[in-house]
Image: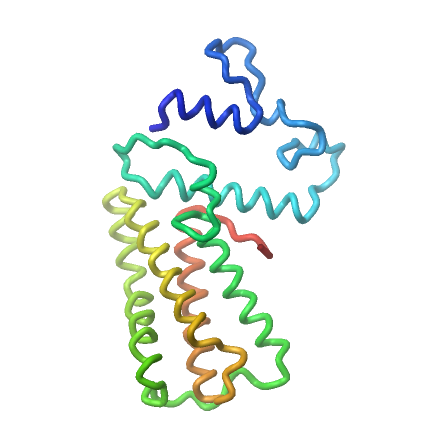
Length: 218
């Protein structure tokens, strides 16, 4: 539940009416200036929004939806735009960025002259630094279906949001330490590509479950 003072501050940030009266109050969208990304198709003269505005809207939707589900049902939510739009914290845009980053890795691999797939061998070829975080990611990815079932059966989407955020953190940390495209050993690169593909599939499922759209670029 969002309290009235917080709602009024949010409306003020968007340029809306913050008075206590309710009759004939213009909508937030209607108070935005011409050319805003929040304009309706009629206000845009039937023209499609620019790619940048579509991306902004997708990020905004993801930010709002994630912010609303990362709290328990009985929580009083003090909505904070900076927190909701934080690209480096527990937020929708951070999850979207991770998905876009994953897609970008695969696109670059497809354009690489080298085949991304070498002979996939045993995980024993990974060194002692890489093997533990690799296995940890595999273990977490294997638990996604159980996490989704638990969240839906118990109406506890905040647990799913927390799980997804933690998973994205682990993946980004792993990729920072062990890049895919620049790896010279084809066998190691193939293992990393396999992990990226599994991660992409599972993260897409999590984002769909939470209703978070993914922009093409960020």
